[in-house]
Structure formats: C-alpha cells, structure tokens
Length: 334
Ligand code: ATP
Image 1 (cartoon, rainbow, N blue to C red):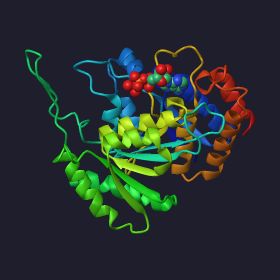
Image 2: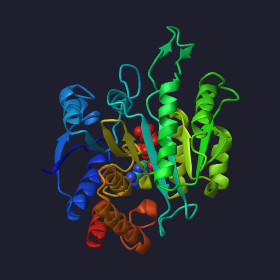
Image 3: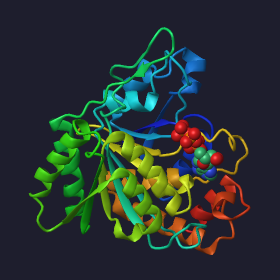
Image 4: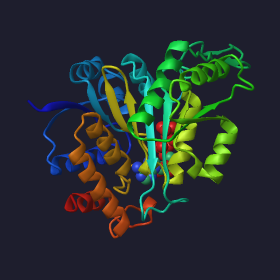
C-alpha cells in the first residue's frame, strides 16, 4: 500500500510551491497518496479555526506531513499554528540545511551548514505571555529543560555521526542568560563528551551571527535553542541565495513535518514568481526520512542542473521565469 502524506498547502505562496513539489514527486515516480487538509488563514476563513481538528486528526493518522507556510494573524488571541503543531506532535528537532547551488545568486559558494534547532521550548513555549493592563510592561517566560536539551544535542551529534559531519558548534548566550542558556550549554558540554570523534566548539550567538556572515565555511552542524535557531537559520538561508532555497524538517519520535522555512511571502503571492526550491528540498528531506534515497538524489540532481544552467529560474535566483516554468524545467531533467 502506498504511503499517505498529509498535505497542508498553506497561505500566500504556499499552494503554488506545494503544487510544484508534488508535481515533481509524482514525475519522479514516487508512489504516494496525498490527503489534503487546511491550516492557517485558509482554515480560519473556512472553519473559524487556524488549526481544525480534522487537520490534527489527519496528521495523527498519516504521521508524515508536507506543509506550505502558515500565517498566524498578529495580535492577541491567536497562537502560532507552526508552534502549536510542533508542540502537539512533539516535533522536538527542527533541522534546517543550507547548501550552495552553483548558479544561484548567493553571497558564498560551497556552503553546507545544518542548523539543528530545539523546537518546543525556550521563549517560544507560549508560557507566561503577559502585557500589563496599562500596556507598559510585557513578559514572557523562557523554559529550558534538561530533557529537551539532552534530546536536541544528542540528535545533532547522532546526525553528525550518521552523515559523516566533522564538527558541531554549540550556539548559546550563557554569559548573559545564565540560567536558561547556561543550562543548555552545560548539558550540551556533557553530551558532547560522548562523541570524541566529532570536533565540538562553542560560540556566543551574537558572535556566531557575525562569524556566519564573515567566514561561514568554518561551520558544519550548529545546535542551539529555539529563538536563536530561528534567527540563525534565516541568516544561513541568505548565504546560499535566500529563503527560497531553505527547507526545514520538524522531527519527533512518531511524526515529521517537512516545510519551507519562510513565511507566506505576501509581497509575491499570486504572481507565480515564488521560488519553489525550498519546498522541493523539503520534499527531498521527506524522501530521505522515508529512506527513499534514489528519488531524493534524482530530484536534487534535476534541481541542481536547472539552477546551474539558469535559463528558467525565478527572479530571486537572478532569472526571469515563473514558478510554473521553473517546475517544468526541473521535471524535464528528472
Ligand atoms: P514569517 O514571519 O511568516 O516567517 P516573514 O515576514 O519572514 O514571514 P517571508 O514570507 O518569509 O516573510 O518573506 C520574506 C522575504 O523573502 C519576502 O520579501 C519574500 O518575498 C521573500 N521570499 C520568501 N520566500 C520566497 C520564495 N520561495 N521565493 C522567493 N522569495 C521568497
């Protein structure tokens, strides 16, 4: 029986880049069934809920999700749908690779960095959100636990071992955030001792941002807490050509959600010019997760060739083609 994938097309450019990824999966001969469900603004408009039960039920049934960007309305009363999904399904690891593609308009060549971001706690745990009645004071609670820190750092080192990576950089702010970041660093040091064949180093987050811009080739795997990982992974995306090149996998024990790391890009939504590579690369992460390495490699090769030749790429990559044209170019090279 074919694997059933839950698909959430999402908001803004989501439907066009998710359709592109699915056309490519189909053309590569992947034998999946797709169950389409809604979340985000589309779901709010249809059902009055950002994350309907029918959507969480489908994820519970099928376990694997391919997801476009979801928009959460700004302001009180709405919790982030992405954060809720990560918490409900215990998706503790957010794996965000950035890899250089020859031909992409990017600041650097030969970049290959994976950010492993703790995905369920820190300042994103939604705990203790408070704004005083007079609007003068706002508070939020940052929670770091031994359990989640051990889990994410172990995940990063195990991934480094499996993928033949050489170095893990622990990014923190323990000099100032002594309790929360301090606990994370202490635990990360303990775990690192179990992996003597992998070089470990530590970097304070502000320095890490500067080093990433100045000398990104020194990085291999980065492991960090939720907020720092969110910021650092967007910074890394720009090293290889921008958010259109950046996929992310949210991995838990039982469930996995594969997504583009960017938002709905309202400035280009509906114009058929979004770069679908982020979503195509998320689909490749999904294939590798399912141990379907042959189509994963074939799709990556076709995408690489399309960007290298550069005659049918989207404007963010320096081309003039549409999302549809770019997708057809990838399919023609499969
Ligand atoms: P969010 O806070 O929801 O992550 P954001 O405010 O960071 O969203 P994005 O929607 O991620 O904003 O877009 C940031 C910029 O990157 C916009 O100018 C957008 O057009 C561009 N961008 C994002 N994704 C793509 C893509 N796939 N192709 C081309 N440009 C993109």
